[in-house]
Image (tube, rainbow, N blue to C red):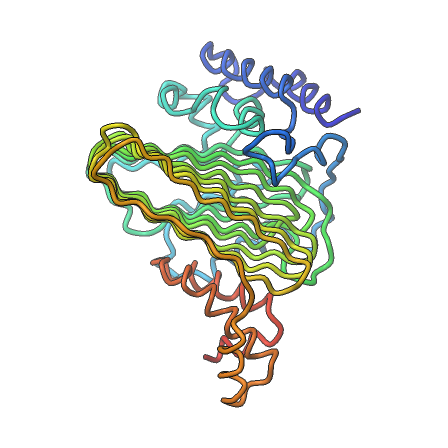
Length: 447
């Protein structure tokens, strides 16, 4: 049986028990979504947006949950130790796509802030999410599968003027008992609200370079963000799943007048990871930062597809992605900035840089500008290259051996992306993740 048939059977068997089953609009959306997935199947490289990242490997692949050497509780404890103690924020934990109340610690919230499991909201107050859940036509076919089958995720609503002083940590642990995790996160920030939200995807088995491969699993996640006028949302995603995991994710933001959205995407795990990140300016004076870093080795593959839609005037966007590629790893970046008619005074800049550490590594970079307005300032660029020999020679003359000199230059290349992250615990974890993937990484830690 193909996995396409597997997912159809899974939907037919479980649709009546999904949270919110029986709600007319939600039932209709799920039915449309699964029919779309059945019609389109997994994306192949015949589609332009998937030219470098085919998912046809999923058509016959069976996944199995890992016999995990770490328990979910141990994973969460390790993450919280990395955080800032008592000031560590609010924690909502999911295991194999289901809320784990015993591992979560939402803590005290300001008046007007709600942080709940999406399954609870769908079962009790589905009208809260009707205008924000999305449609069957959003994104590619994996997003449609998510719309049909996602049974849980995070629901975050911030009333006008509410600020979450501490970060919200959404932790997703996969491959513990189930072969697949499908989650959907909804973030609704009303006017002048502010929050920092961390999505952390980890496997029950660590994804460090050189570790033994865990059993395969599928992670399918969609996050939808609605930022009201003058709201400020910082979204940080750290993906450290097992090395046999396939990670498919979409982040879709809609910004009202004067809102600020910052996305930091750090991808260090999974066999294949695809991240679709998009924001649309629906009001004047919006700002967006899309900042990303990935590392691949072995035969791993990471793909970032981004879109910034300057639909209104006086918007500002900055986009920076960097990839470190070793072994026979492959990295893909395709970024599109669209400036709509009438979106005057747009200021947009996009850049993608890739560092190849081996002759077998491969990077594909395709930045795009599509401009239909005058009086704009837009630029883009991309580079693919190796370590600069002059810089390497300089460090060698200062007493470093070749291995440590190369690693120091590699770490410096990655550190420029990490410097834009304001949340210190996450920055430290990302720095440690990069060091762990480099021989002699303790040298960078000492520096």
